[in-house]
Image 1 (cartoon, rainbow, N blue to C red):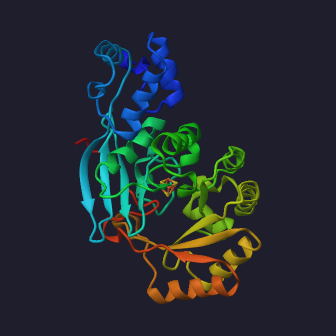
Image 2 (tube, rainbow, N blue to C red; image 1 turned 60 degrees about the vertical axis):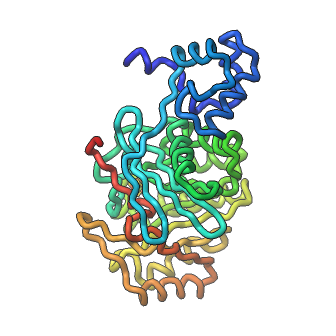
Image 3 (cartoon, rainbow, N blue to C red; image 1 turned 90 degrees about the vertical axis):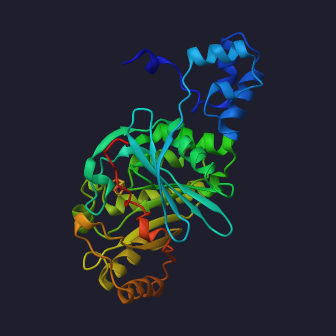
Length: 345
Ligand code: SF4
């Protein structure tokens, strides 16, 4: 551990914590608010930019705290302006984040871990395994960095990039508070996408948050889910749906079930019927995502007709269905489709 590792990171602290920090250095509390403003509203990259702080206090902060921001390594722009960014962290690991501008809103897809331990068979991120959790400040930094590249204000956040958010629970919950209270993005405009860690879903239901829960289900029964998502299948699909029921009852939020449609794997009409029966009576909708093919993994995208018949069966059974817009298709900007690049820039 270097000397630096023991110093507090400014990005990741709340206004209240920064006020306490200012006071601990003999400064009035309002200086902490000024720092928060520089970090979260003005996206400062260095303490030197915080020109309304006394220069002696800036010197103290520079010596006693860390402020490091992500570096943009590359931008991959799709024809619909969806842009995938590769960002370098301070330890030179990299994560991907995606900026999705729509006519009426701007959404960002954030990573929560470097790599992922869940080993889903269809996923590009899974290939390298888990490297480490991101700190809350590193999650928020992705949004701040993409904001500086966005023509419009970011209004929506999806935790759907690399990693399993509920396995980095404390940092993810802290980042929700920071993005909401410090950056100003509404909680109802945030979505956590998870493979479904049952005890953490129940814990999240008790946090008093208003975020949307999205479950990467991808299979309507345990046998098939085990082959696609071995690490996620420690809970049965029934216990997972039960936990979602508890989440919906406590938060009054509709739960989304993500269903990646993979040709000849989980896209039959029988699968659709099984899925509809599993979700009966739950406040939810199913988001169908036609698979984006990843060369080395061998899975295929279904044809248009089988996507339509899958959807028709669900709707016929009374299940609410949405279909993910084909945005960013050319750059694989979709759940479980972000690739960890191990090469350092
Ligand atoms: S799909 Fe999501 S949970 Fe599964 S390995 Fe990929 S990043 Fe992890």
